[in-house]
Image (tube, rainbow, N blue to C red; front, side, top):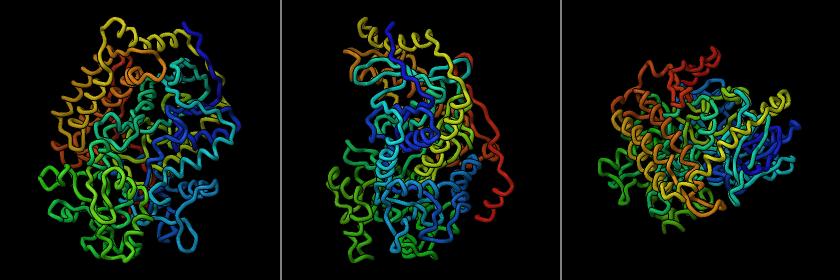
Length: 606
């Protein structure tokens, strides 16, 4: 057995995106020893791809906004399956977290009187998204890194965590390897925070970075933590569809927030055809009024392009399936039309949407100031994940915390745009605070040497299979999984397809047990993929099983065989845990009860 280098810390943060950095900063403030482990280089986290803005009821553009309206919007968007306490904390604390970010050096766009500017976004009643052009996530990561590295934390870049380590029921650290040399490392810690983001890369078409494979969700599951709401996957309505090399790359909702409209190949604004009953009072079918809304007219109603993402994605899918799509299998998103309204439209678009302008110019040869973009739905976000306590972010496994996209509860059945960035700040801060508190009150647990040896042997098995010529190609298994998830567990689902998907996942699990790789351990993509397959297949199975279990359509989950909401399913969350026999166990658990005062806020904002 190798002699594994061991690092000792009070709090270990896995992930260096917005949630991980904010957690590490808060834990460092508490005076404990903190480590951050990330799979890529610092600054490359997927948070940098968040474009449109961070949702917070600052009320800088419309003074009618408040935490209560934000809370009600979040609950309505989530179809009331959200954890109401999380939604309350998020709405109340988001403004302070944004102002704090500003105090640390974030440079937000400004109103004429110098306040943080806010823009409209889908599902939000008032302009609520504080932004930096369409590069908000990049500015957030820059600010958190610049502030965080001065707090005394240790950063381990290009390290992959394979498994969490336990002492009885309690998590006491993690086992992983450095990607440069492939050497195994042990991280001994009193508390561990999972902040690893999403799982979009288990689908073929995704806006997510290469490392968003659901690893953190799977680590928590295999350590005994409970998962909820895994069926709720958000397909962002607007990803690039051409050229193929960039298919799925995100086009920010900010394009629609600035006045962009969706058209089919007949030139028709098809979103006018289908407005849900619960948004009819807030949404206009008048084009002029919709334009005024995007320009900040308090008395105008929103255009239908700014309805919730699940609804817009399904409308786009309908147009494509019924033959009214664009040449490359999408629809048209047109911001260039605003030249009819603004004499300086070209400069306005370049100033408000600089990344989008350059993205299309460089990658697709399209000038968005003169012609429409081709767009289509792309796998973007998972509302489900690890179940956490609303106040502390601790999971059902002692010593293990989670924050950000890998944690569930805030968004319910569907996330509103911009809520993810404020989620990172609010609950990253809370995870760091309470993980540090737990670490101060808890003695260091013992690492089980036999467990470590077993994990190491399992991780090295792909090399032995290659040597014996008995293995399977890990890249082929990954590609098959991505194609299958796209086809059978996508935007529109049926019992037949979900059952077929579960059967295929089980078959792929058997192949993954035989995944093989050659070469040495340093920077070996085949080895990385062979190890990662366990996590990808775990999360894929959880999504498919939960989706089959929820026999209704709600939020990001649409069942063609059960197209309506079901009363019974409106009262429960679907829970998944690892059973004693190693199999996946599914339960219906009553959704979190809402306090009377919060219910009153919902009623007042209907």
